Length: 429
Image (tube, rainbow, N blue to C red; front, side, top):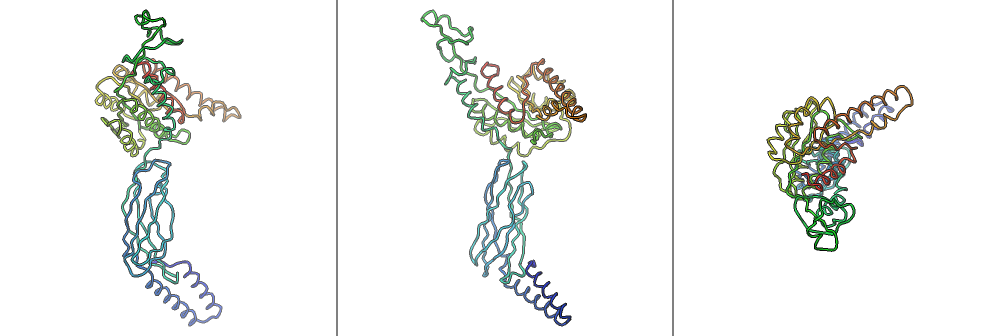
């Protein structure tokens, strides 16, 4: 049962009137009349316990995008149910507020709840509360029940806007537009006329001798190569860069690379490791790898502890026993890398083609240029020190045969895709 604001207002007016008249009998009469009206209103309100509620709608929503679930409420009772309905969800699911409903006797109503999630993961519906008002609007019957439903919020894929451009580069690399990109693969494709800029080592001298023009061999890029994406979900992945957690920026770049590589005919696997293996997508088909990766990524949260470099290396070695491209998404944090993965990087670089993808903080550039006061100068010094440390770690990795892509969050996906295409163009996968 619930009493409305209308009943409270009437009670207040009646009390003030009786106080002015200074009669106890009048106060009792007014209160009794209001109480009788409330009881009658509740008795005449439509029953909420007889309502049958079912739910349908989206069970997968991408972070930052809108989704919806639909409640279907059937009223088998003999009275119309007029009132309010509240579909409660976890706060991070971003549900809409209360809605007015009118369900005739023997009829049904459909209520749509809009969801705009603000965090990844599984979001469960809490409770559906229905308040049925009486004809006088003084009181209502109210009941809540759980109508189970779970929506999985997938990581955002903002970098998919780059996919058409990268696929065009891939088609050019694959020989459909050879004039744009001339690379070396491992499988002979055809002969064509030499143009300035071609590698002289690709000239086919025997065929040239038979023609009046110099001709070169073209090569079809390798296919069916393997790429293992490794997400470092340790402490450094929890830091926010330009308002976005490093882990989410890494996921966005990983999704673009996976989409591009699967279209290129390569196999893509995913590992997420800190002190435990948080996710593993291995052996998925090219058509299923992207949905399976987004599904697995949705449940990953940063672990606020240093990652176990030994576990990461052993998991990788057990997963990929043959040479392949390994893309490690981590931060160029000297303390974390030198105590974790760096002692094992020589072994990994000897077994795999290694590429480290990191997200740089634009705030470092802003701070390094500030000179307004003493605080700004100290901030600039700290920023320069951080920048020098990242440069040192990147150089150390490069000397050990590891490629490094260090870019701003919005630029990392495209830069990583370009690095992959460059490796593929030069036959280094």
